[in-house]
Length: 342
Image (cartoon, rainbow, N blue to C red):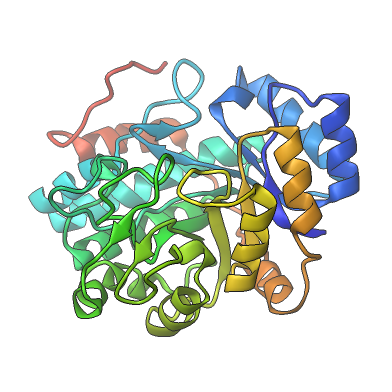
């Protein structure tokens, strides 16, 4: 298999996509709202993708809650943005952590039932005043210690439900003043400040199985290359001072923060130390370009991938209705869904 994760374009595989998956053999697959119509359809698409690969490949999704929730009403419940857990934590620390853990456990129950086994969550970004709102209320707070403990609770809830967490966006997207989907953010804070704040939130989470990079330049460390394609950031910060030794994947390689063709971006991310490249938009020409440059998964990258997947649990039975009732109780006064879910 090759060191990349791919999306597909629609609700079912095309013949071209089926051939691509069989020939390119990406390590994993990722889903977006464009791929979702109903639980039955989505289960069928997941099975179709895995059949195309000839193996039970990891299937990822961004199911955070709030603005970033690929599955939602009427088929799946709405969940709060990360900031709501921060509010609950401020009201009562233990109750807030219990809510974060239970919310993630309920998300995991939804995903596990569909065959999705990786969620790109928790968020460990620490936003600052004046930053672009792309992180905004997705974050658990503005203090690294608080962010880290809530992120840990979320990761635990997912893991307990049989879903692997991916912490993002390492080593931090909270200071970015532009949206990296559109432009390249440049953070000019000095290294001591970054180590004490942005990077500090990731240190207690360094044992999590997977992490996703930030397409952000930290000029005090590497004045040119964003973290995703910076060997210096990966070596000195992500693997060094943060101490993360899990599977490191890039954020979406098609985002406009990065320069060059998607093939060049793929080579640069792998050369910098990313284990796996993520490509999301489902455009076949780009998918082929990424596949052409992604190496076979081998060596340390293969070890980390195997170690990550070996951590999956078989979830204990969960009374989902009782869990939702308890979740609403824990979140009372901090959040309530705008859309009812039956």
